[in-house]
Length: 464
Image 1 (spheres, rainbow, N blue to C red):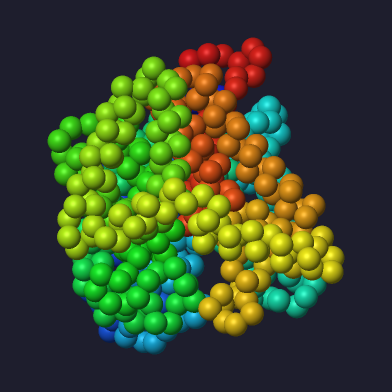
Image 2 (cartoon, rainbow, N blue to C red):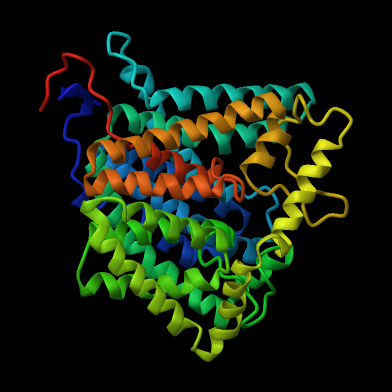
């Protein structure tokens, strides 16, 4: 790939515009395996991974925006393909199919050796990436010292890959182009995942029911009509709700018109049916952030009113009203909420360990459904268990550092695009104590957007 220097940035010759539809080959791959996946047996798993690599190579040749679109689609639909294949070939505990989107992210990282130029001033957005990489390597070493080879490989792949991809975005991507590419991708993702999510709630399909019976996830409800906590085509209610909230936010502020409402309406209802309050709260915080800026204030007000109306309508529709209304009511329980109390117990349990998990346990894959296994909720607990107190604090500092850079970029520039990056970062800040935002699809979503804050120009650098 030929690299050109444009306005102080390295970019590939022939880099595409967002409208060149990088999502198309990814969606074609998903469509093929949706049809044949149930008949391929266990061979379908490595074949899908190879297909993801092929899509990655193809879209990367077109440019970073095309590749980013394809990656969004692969992460949104790969778990759906996993369930279809598992329904025919048997449950795969390792989840080999889910490696596909992560390997797709690795293809562009090969270019890092060419893109890093020691003569260029250090980009401040790279700081948190370097720090979090050091923490991840430390956790990997802890796992290796304990002889946990599989856990080490899985942990490094899930945690490190999104960070390396974010480094490519930092050095190569144009913020506005990437945001536009994301809007085009979510134009495809939101209606498909929203409609499927509603169908899943009303009548879960055979592959969804089969997977729910084996998956070590306690928060997906029951595999019966009106008993599912909607996870749509993704791997959990948390992943689906986080992707949907991000897509709705981008779509609402960077695209307008009646067609946008039609595209997003099913996903709004499916988001409520996920019952994932963390995504609801992060979306609200992002809207509050948008209210602070003139470029987004009027639209944020209109969206807030629209969401209130949508929520009021949703709680009046008989098949959905009870479950959504009951879940919304829990937002006012405060310290009496069961989830809040469970998290306090987790902190107490870790603190009462003989060494208070000072060093950390490295990457560990556990079945939270097994007796005696403590669930790991939120980045604070995840970093504490994985990296220990010291390493965990450094990892959390890297997250806050990245979020602060995105927020500062919004305050400095105040354009709609900059505010969008800052708003998504603020939503992620709320999720730190409540959800894992750095691994696999969640890590891709967080790191890919938070590094898009505009770079501070070095003194003397030519202005465009």
